[in-house]
Length: 475
Image 1: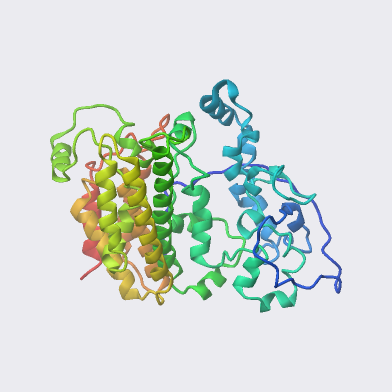
Image 2: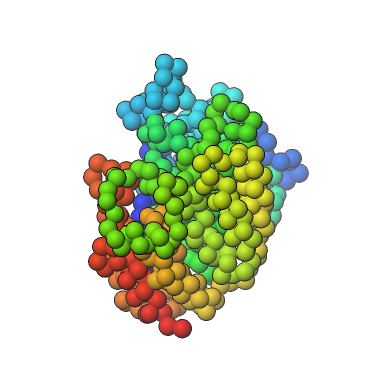
C-alpha cells in the first residue's frame, strides 16, 4: 500500500501564466541535428511560448501526459507562479528589509530572479529568443535546458538515435536520470554559492528551505509518464530517496564550503557564523520550564545548553543510510568533524571550508556508488525500513523536529518502496506513520512559521509510535 500523504510541506513557488501559440516547422523543413556542436554555452533561451502549441505540448489530453506537458505544467505546477510571487507585498517587504534605501523591486532583484525565473533572471545579459518572457517563472527550459539548438529537432526520428551526452552538448539536459534530476532541483531548493537563501534572507521574510527529493518528486504534478520512470528504475521509490539523500547532503556541504570560504575571505555578503546552517528551532522557540522527562532526554542525548545543533536536516538520515550500506561511512567521520567545528561559539571559517570541501567530495564518490548500484531488492528495503524504525525506537524522544521529520520521510519512502516491490506493509505501520505525520504537522500552529507546539512526549509519544512500527516489521 502506497503512503500518499508523506510530505509535510513542499516549497511553494508562485507565478503567472503566459500562453502564445507557435506553429512548428513544416514537415521536411527541419534542419539537421548538429551533433558535432561544442558544449552548451551561451545558448539562447527560447521561452515557454515555443512549447505551447497544441501541435506540440498543449494537447490538453485528459488521460495521458504525452503531448500535454505544457497543459499540465501551466494548470497544476506551482513553478508557473514563481515570478508573480515577487509582486506580493511580502516580497517587497523582504527586499526593503535586505537592502533598505537601496532596494529595487523584487522583480528586478537578481538574488530573487535567479530562482524565481528562467535564465538566471538576467535576460538583459543572457541570450534569449523573441518569445522569451521572464514572467513565465520557472518554465520548461529551467529544467530541460536552453532550447536554441534542440527546439526544432527534438521531435525528429533522428533525435532518438542520439546519446545522452550528444543531447547534453546541444543544451538538452537529461532529467530522466535521477541523479541529474535531483542535482537540478537542489540548485534552488537547497542552494548554491550563487543561489543562497541564508539567514539574512530568511530573517527578511523568506521561507526556510527544507528539501527532501523523494517526497517532492512524489507530490510533484507529473507532466511525463511515471511508467517511464518505473521502467528505467524498478526501485524508483527507494532509489529516489537514497539518491536524494546523497545529493542533498552533497549540495548542502558545497554550500557550507562556499559560505565559509567567503567568510574567510572577508566577503561582505558572507556573514559568519551562518545561522541558516543550524536548527532554527533551537533559538526560535519560547523560553519555558522543561518537564523532567524532557530534561532527562536532553541529558541522555548529551545536548549542551546554549549550543545550536548543526546538520540536523540534510545530514541526519543520510548518515544513518551511509552507515547502514557501508558505502559512505566516511560521511560519519566528516559530519562528526564538521559538527565539532560548527558547534563552537566562533567556528573557524578556514577550517570549516576545508572540512566541508573534503566532505562534499567524499559524498560525490558515495553518490556514484549509489547511482551504480543494482536494483534494490525487497530484502534491502526491509532492512532499511527496520534500521530507521530502530533509530526512532531508540531515540524518538531526543530528536528535534528536523531529525524527526527526516526519520518520518525515510520510513515513508521505505513504506512506498515496499509496496512498489510487491510487498504489503502491515496496516498498523501505515496507521502509525500517519500519526507521526500528524504529530509533526500539527506542531505548526497559526501565526508561527516554526513547530512551536512540537512535543515528542505527547501521547502517543514519538518513541511509542516508532517502537510499534519496528515491532510490526519482524526480524
